Length: 287
Image (tube, rainbow, N blue to C red):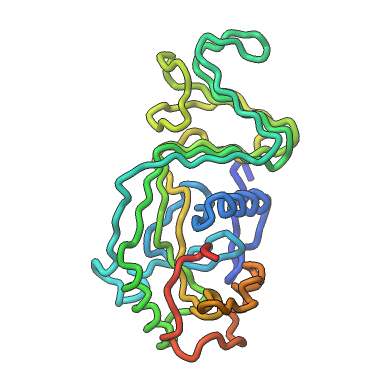
């Protein structure tokens, strides 16, 4: 492969995994577990826009097209967007075996050597462990989701939309992203502040830029990249009764795993509604 990263190859409605499959599944599953209604943009920073649509393979979004390009009903400014006025700090690390050290400039590292620049050290005791940090995150979203849903329900009735399709309705953009996934036990990675004037790295501050300093047995990394779209919110057409319940009588299907509910909802062999009016365009990830 001449040193290039292996690529994810697609087949119809399914991802055919190669050498990056474990990383893709590991990362996307963990993002979904940590942030619930958000799905990972794999790979981080990959091209994605509000109004893109596709399929979910597990927690991996498989892009098919864009509403505005593929359906005349969405041409022009039909899709309205808005951005949150606040920023937040999104972070997590695997539950065990991850040690994070923020070394001040001039302090001593574990070997007793003075630290020339403020440094972030991450040590992993276990394989497939994750360190994730996204500073100054902003969420942009489709503001007229109900209108989009009504159009899609009409397209569904006309046979031009598939019920299993989901739409990117929310995007989380990070001011600065640092990510590392360990490839084996006893892996480590470190980053230095890009300026010797910085006394200590503040992981919540996107203005503090970092450079890769050292790594050992790291399977995947993002080296302090700016402005990446790291997560997305997805909506799809769902059945109100089967999945949401009515009053005091919660249907037993709510106890099924997400994968089983998705299979039943999308199956053409299972009738879940009398008409399109029984359907709703709703957020995925809300159980």
